[in-house]
Length: 183
Image (cartoon, rainbow, N blue to C red; front, side, top):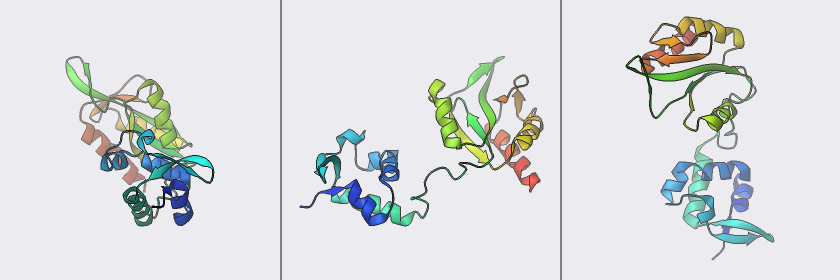
């Protein structure tokens, strides 16, 4: 039986190993094949180098995902390099209690880098942080948004980009409304 390697999939599909490995690390792949880490894939040797071996089922699964997703090859952040305003949920699995009231804390920020990279920056100090919304807006629009959203289902903390949010859905809807009004 022929051993199947990531390099075979790369050659057949044209998608880089880096992107294939990123997808393998995706929870959906791990759950489907009941593994927790890459180290659970068997080891083999491809062209004289150590490499992970895929089962026929895993190989076919990945090939199907690549062929069915036209953006798979470019699954880097589509906002990378563009001016972008993002909304980070700083406590996605919980809330803070302020004056006896349950509230969630969000940050609205601007970047010209990849929002995914910014999310990783937040996760250094807060592993739970998650970007929940991105908009192609510039820094001046971000400043107007910070003023527009304040007091609408949220309270801005001082002169920062942080907000205590009382109603998450309404807060996010107001941000979306702001963006639509700019069109």
